[in-house]
Image (cartoon, rainbow, N blue to C red; front, top):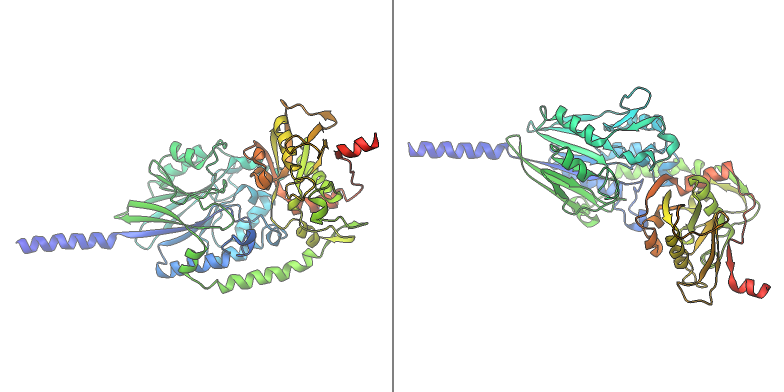
Length: 507
């Protein structure tokens, strides 16, 4: 009898072990079209490298391994932007991404184009909270239920940040609403819980405390989500964040990492969850050979783009130089032209351009799209924010602190003038600041246009980090192309930065 009971205990243990399984979710977010390992100054892992790693993992555990992408995927660099995002489609299809959620910048080509992209993707493009204003209907599918090899059912739904109304090309989101994601998440959970063992929300929401809606808030106020695959705030979460029973995972951005979430399931119940980030070396350990199909598609895209890059968008009577010895310590035609372009696009009170971000001349004669893209190779986004008058003074002092030496943060300006006295110590060189023809009020709030690099504190502009963002637009190269086509080069005014010693000599 004792032997029989021991046999039964062993049998039960064996069955339990058989029923235990491991769901692995690889995830990416905020690629912004970075698909080469040379992108983002060689910090990106590369899509061919990531795809090879995920495919290797899927080969070992094909029915329990997934790849989710949390958005801002179809917009970012010229190789993808020139096709209105469509060049990304064959890459994602070949990579084997299972589900994608659109981020705010994926709306930069307009809702009809996003829907067109969704129809060409092999994987579902999900977002439950984006509806048409005219009839309240969802523009994309809301969710998908995946049945895994062990019988586990995984319910997956998507959410897109409501900040898209001002953190995208605003003319393209005028026809849609971004519904309250907490309310929608509760509805999705209510719908999926009776049918599913695991609920995953892929959201482009972020953990920025300045945002009204964050993935953390949704986890707290809509309990029932097991895993959140997040994006938008470009935040690296090495072990994820646990909010109640919800694990939140995010990789950062630009393919600097590949995320991996492991969910252990036993008898249709989750018994453990963990999140981790894989760097380039860890990805290569999964498979050291980049995916050949993706490499071929990238080569085809490069060939296909050549005629587009050769398209003439403007004509210039003379070279606008990007010589760093000129533009990084002097007011220049090209710098002022670009600052004007940013103010034109954003409608801000004034605009600035860090001259270290200008990487090529605008040539004499025909100006092509390729020329424009060479000027701005980094995929930075034109952005608008609010800034105090006192911070403007700090910003200008930082801009000229190294003068007359070269400095990548030396600013070209539009809608703003000031006097520079290089005989004074750094930090006390700027005076007579005018915005829109009126003297600076240090207690007033102004609007400023710049690229997103500066609003992340780039080039030491800490006073610009954390400003309230009131608008995000297209990439710098897209805006420059539009500006050349709609406004042209024209006459570029100088005299925005007055040198005190010059004034003294003139007197």
